[in-house]
Image (tube, rainbow, N blue to C red; front, top):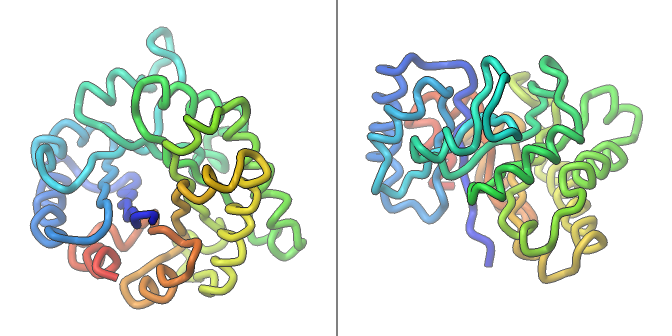
Length: 248
């Protein structure tokens, strides 16, 4: 039985004091939740937030990483750096990284391998734009993202990953894929993983939904058989709103 995972992607929000305050509130309000809870602040807030969540039920995640161990990569951070401040999960291939910062299937694959080699857990984002959905190529785009991210990964490594299906047209727009639309793509990903690996491997990998999930729609989305949690953006910036999703 897959356990739901609810991860808050704080994006480029919260100063260090604000992040500490939010992390304290999340730890307190989500205590006893029947889901894995993850918070993903900016790099500069990771150490301070780790001081809050360390030893609690809340895990720490980062929003990205570089695939090299060290070197002349100004502005980037390595897996070892993330591990040193208590990070457990790393978001990879987010649509904003693809749209604004040149992320590709190849760079996502390199990052996935680096994260796994370091003993961290990748949250791999996949999803289509509005133009791609309207062009009826959602499955083609999603398959391209999944196959690209998992290139040369063994089944033993694949089961350590989480996939976040994020329809780009539903991120920060207030638009949400209907529970049926979301389930259809999640089921497609699940079947694709069977083709790439096998049914036992596919049945273990958790697939989150990442498109404007909120407390008022979370229960219906999370009730679908192939939706195993959420990668939460805006609703993760207020503890009460985030908790509403966790409790769903």
